[in-house]
Length: 111
Length: 77
Image (cartoon, rainbow over all chains, first blue to last red; front, side, top):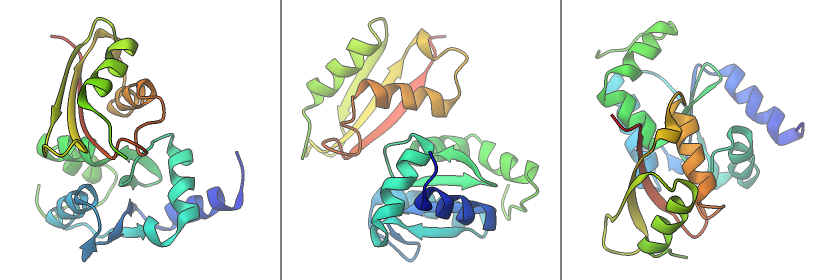
């Protein structure tokens, strides 16, 4: 698969260590699952780039094909797909998310 | 735009006949579900792969008719 949307996604991932594809914006999530991931990232004190898929239908469909994952939100760290809300929450509660970010060289405010 | 809980459970059971499957209607609105699937088929798979296997079992309904499914997967202990 190679198309302009896929290239745009790759460019976004290449340009940011942590990328959250979400519904709405961090200050005003349009979906509880997106909001939950924003809260987790904010709680860890890590900077992240947010892409509002509601404002960009091509990205909304493209990101699902890119990761073979049917839902939003989707969290990426250093270009690697970590998962959606359930997996991110599980990893956070187990302390795995902070550990993974540290391993990738991203400073976490709270361990 | 919604799916009935028993339909969700049946699709998962068809794909994972030996699994322990629990589907809960979280909000009581027929639109926000939770599912816990415990199956030997998940052994050796990453969390992402495990969830993708369940999404595949739902045959494209996830993200369409089925808006919200909080998913928990595990291998039997």
